Image 1 (tube, helix red, strand yellow):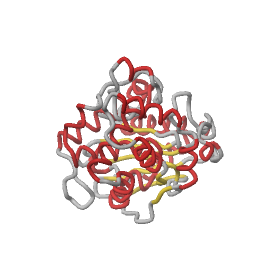
Image 2: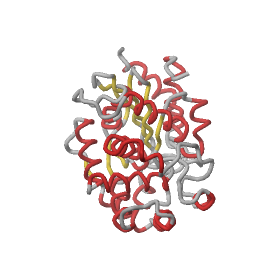
Image 3: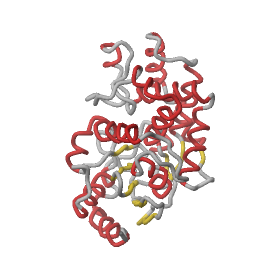
Length: 303
């Protein structure tokens, strides 16, 4: 299918929303990003990518990287990960401490910050260098060897990372963190500071549309594991607005406060969209609208 005319129509439809919302203000390096940018890309199963707008402009992937860290942790260490992190929507802000105390240091899901810290901790134990392993994986799957970390964003995260430190120390007090907290936080902040474009993200996520098969044809996840990751993306991937996202878009998706969203149509394609203006839940205003238009115009969804 030639997605190009469709993407151009979507870009025109959502143009009035671009610039709406507010960039992530609590991370200074993100607060200064021009909110008037918009890009969208679609990658088919063979890796052909179609794009519109700022689809080749690198941006801070932020929480979108949690999907790839989860996939690597499952591939390297198997289902034992689920003994340390749940699979249920949280209903609370992504950096909330409240539920952890009620639930004895076990985070609700791998996409809130506490859960992502557990996943990064597990990946660090399995690989010895979680952030570098993740970056190398993303380079291979995206086909872009130039992918890298944004040192300014990492430093910004580090200097405003007290809440994440509190989450990590709290879970460590329950025995749910294996590595030294400073080591874990360092890898987590660098992981969130990976820069990718819509084109990079759409290509890199294709293993989730290909039922676990990597770009080179080797198997990263079993078909069942790929289904599980997609399911958790659908129910937990857009912070505490996952129900609204499922209602509007109807696809597994993961957003980041850099303004990006990656979404999966299993067996068909992957999508990535970016526009820095966020709604109160931390999801891109124009990005969600663009994905909504995509599923409305194509009829492609998991429902």
